[in-house]
Image 1: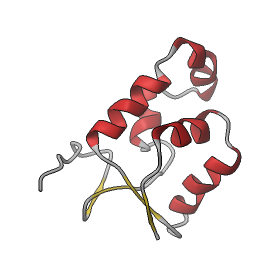
Image 2 (image 1 turned 90 degrees about the horizontal axis):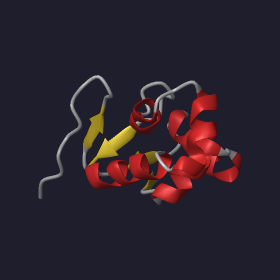
Image 3 (image 1 turned 120 degrees about the horizontal axis):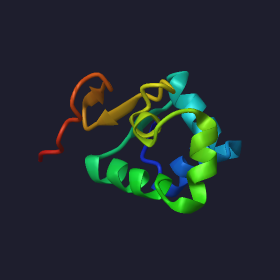
Length: 95
């Protein structure tokens, strides 16, 4: 199954867990494929950078960049038909 998650759902999964985190776990277990785009990841970064989330981010011991790129959390992300690996530059979306 392929899914595009709303950035608020992903932020909730990262910060609080619960049902949204189960979706990230399913992606880790390769039961679903998560698709995203550069603008969506930028929006997620903006959400996580809000002052009201600073304590939660600090408690994770990860940077916002590490949380968003998924490299430290092993969240596989897809851009179109291309899997993004955090060690490489983020692909750009072209039609």
